[in-house]
Length: 164
Image (cartoon, rainbow, N blue to C red):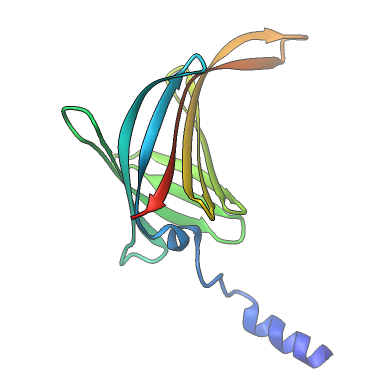
């Protein structure tokens, strides 16, 4: 039994999982994104999300198309694996902007700021589909001894995408 464990260790050491989050998301997804403000839905958009393995190792096309306005908006990004052992990815927006992402189970998280706004984005795979949500918030006054800050949630965008 010990020999089998040692052999198994040497064959698995340094090998990465057979699939990655990008692989599990591969395909075309569609859904309706709801845009909420102040706890109320203010608008909605049709979303198409396309994920395709790129020739570049451990990278996937990560394209989101927003419809329902006079003009379509296309966000043509690339998801890249940085380190499989830590679940570290990056979304490359293609213009020098790189968003760090972290995989926990079936959820990919990213937190970043744009100006004074803090944004949190996450993608969660489930049996129902791929849930995508972005929240934006703004820092409020400190509380207590001044080292704790609350963030007021200003907007929530969410969509449950299903494979088409």
